[in-house]
Image (cartoon, rainbow, N blue to C red; front, side, top):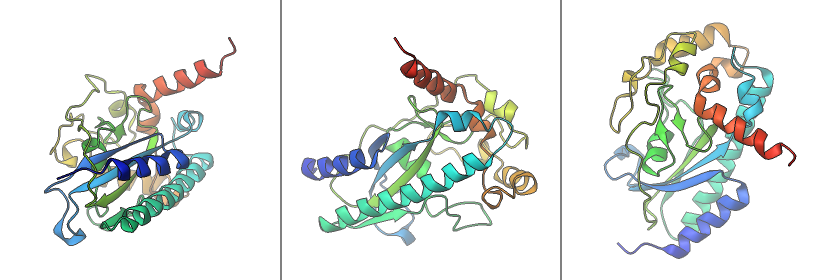
Length: 239
């Protein structure tokens, strides 16, 4: 297949304009369920979350985090809709995966995992907290995905975890839902996370924040996120 550099530059222009912190193209051959359509690739993008807000939820979510979470999801949906229109305008199929929507509430899943697209696009790995971890942003990010058949050259995927022996998130999880499993491509989510235990704890303790769908304690505890905070503080320090 002949890849379109011109189309990639247009995608890059949109995402730069929208303030995406990172993005890439994922090769998804054989990974997208047939019910969603024939989408061999995806554009995966990340929006950064405010490090100060993320450090404030070490003991649990608060209203500031809830507002940021909801606003970022809305922003992701708007950006992904714009990308979908761009790709459709180029004569290509494209479908924006909704941000944080559980289309399968029984199994606590969405239509397609954003983390799969993100790892395949080279944005990071799935950490011991079962969240996407980016070297620059840590897990303090939100992901968007646009499935497509556009001729965009896939980026190099990330295929191993860089969490090492760290278990800060596992120890921090009040639900005991993190199992300490080390991610690799194809590893079942349940090897890392007990989603039912995680969900039940959030609904019992944090129902007043986003209907019990958010927590963030394990993310706040992540040393990769703390690196992000230190870097931001260093950039703000007068020299």
